[in-house]
Length: 284
Ligand code: PMP
Image (cartoon, rainbow, N blue to C red; front, side, top):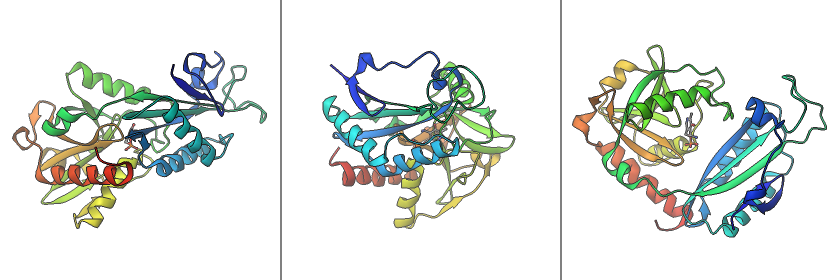
């Protein structure tokens, strides 16, 4: 039997259900997190918890229990579900109330849900890299909030899927923002360039780990907007996310990057990233 968390209690996964008038279901009125689990241990849990609080506060939802309590419940959930390698999905919504766009009364209790999933590391893709496509970024202007409203991201990812690609690289006009579910990086003359963390992208936890690794290993970094032309002329391109880690990009819209081979800076960062995982969660 598998378990899930519903409003502070661990229950049978098949009984974790919400009301049809839950605002998450009707409006996507909530926020979420995905946390990686390696060897039964969460990777960067504090960072994910901090972003969860930040996202929920930014839309006026207060967590019904403390982050320490949530972390403790998540650890219990990993144990009960016997999860070694996978992810935890966690979301909070504004709760159940009669449908109305304006927020419900203060007494409405937010719905907090979490469950686990077994997910392997994408070993083959990490080695050979992945194909991507370009698509206009049609999302709203608060992409820094990890909102349940993901329609823009879904449409972009579907376009990639239909093209047989792994990810869609989004751009606002000439400026590259981020992937549909990842951050995007170029490498030029040894310098790693990625979009600055502002309202136009999600501040990836993996991105923060990578930038920290660059700093500690004297790899030059520029956090700034870069253009489609810079992307086309890059020496290397890669993406990052909780599930995809440091993923080489070897094709964009049918054009090969670096003749279709992952580059040395990307490979170096992959190795440093694995060491960081092993430091926190034990050998992979
Ligand atoms: N941007 C978007 C739009 C995402 O959905 C994700 C995945 N959560 C990321 C970036 C990467 O964030 P993280 O490294 O925290 O998974």
